[in-house]
Length: 215
Image (cartoon, rainbow, N blue to C red; front, side, top):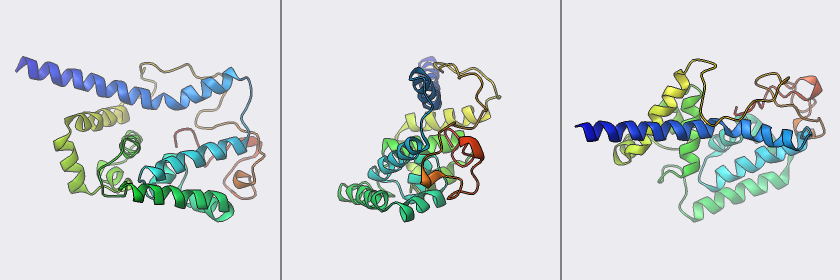
């Protein structure tokens, strides 16, 4: 009994570490950007998010899942596909690659799908909605959690992270840069795909409301 409790505690600690690492990715990106002592252009921001969408698609995520992996609403991803023919072609090719290798919605989840699901739960989504986002049915999700106990531990850790009080300390988080408004990423406006003209919801001065960090 004690061994079982010790094992569960170790698994929970491991799961909390994984979630802490996931939540620190955006802060790490900011720290590396600060190390270069420059503000990224909006075009760089767009390309980086497109690359995240392509990576998700190549690992079997649907269009909604790929958009979530890129941290943008689905309609923004579809706008990118309409405006940028090269991106649309690349996204279709990524989906074809996933399909050719059996990485399709409803199949065995990939690490990218699991990460997306955990992030969705951490940000407030109920687990059925998070599972649907990556193409996993409720029954398939329950089977996965039963067959892979570490997945259940990660889900519980994501739920704990969601309910954690604001400002609670997390391990291995790099310091935030001073003087930045929370929830925004500062970029230079040079990309028509994310310009205020093409996205009315954007605010002037390079603060995009549609693509907050980790959003």
